[in-house]
Length: 391
Image (cartoon, rainbow, N blue to C red; front, side):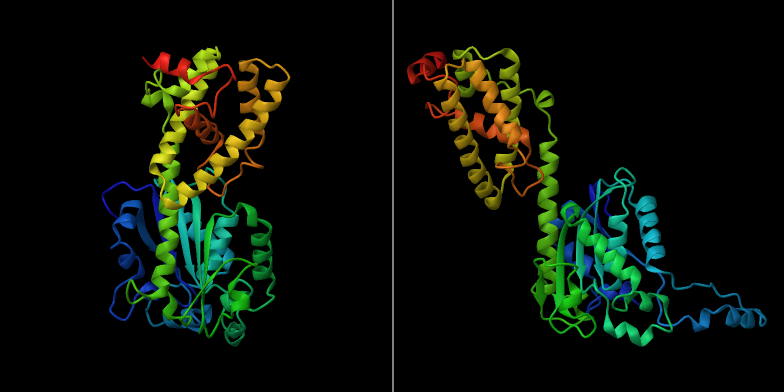
């Protein structure tokens, strides 16, 4: 791992009978090393591989064979295939013991490795190690793999991959039940996958990427032009951006202590005799909105613009009603903000989890910070009044 402190670790989990070679292309370059040549990814993530024991047959490791070998003085290390649930416990322990200093973890699993990751995500307890903030599914048999029937008599992992196997079916049902609370996910399917058909490569109806690879090459991109590389790179860049925006949203108004007393949105509140606590709340909301909007990329800017339109519309409706019934400026101010709060998860819902109620209030005060009367707290506020206060 790098010496620079990162807040998120990406863990690659191989599949059935796999290992470190799972992620290595024909040139000997690993998937994670290719990804880390991207500066924005290397600055955001540390990347590691998790390995576990998985072989097609346990015959050599059977107790009777081990006892026979020991008669000749050999003491080989005994390793057995374990059920998926046990492998998930092993991965969870790996994260807790080796990645505890990170705030978040992204799990990327190939084939059976993706099932192990699912179990870890579903059984994760918030506060028990880093949060799991992303899941990459690469050729994962969410609904079983018909070809695993060939080895079902030899290996416990194969039995669990057989379609309709109770554990795998239960795992997928639990995944579907938790659909609304799952971390950011990407589902990648190989067009020429000889083991996992498209019907099994998705846990439920969802967006997915169908790329020209088979089951073995899909996790070994040969270059940055490879579709497998592009799929994971795009996914991780989205995680990196979300993480950056969430960290920015944690900056506090008290720590920054910006001076907004001469800002137009504050002057408008002073002209309307808005209470001191209301003014301070508006300043904090404005600060939060400024942080997010200045860091926004093109997609975020479009989202914030659409959100701003909704916020202003809600303001106008609320202002118009309360002004018509003779409410004071302070009452209008309070009612507008109460309406913003009540609609936070309804009319004002957005797809970015780093946008919260404070940012939505802040968007309104950003609009109020313009030298116009689009957003004021009383119809008696004029541009001349505002200009006079600015002198």
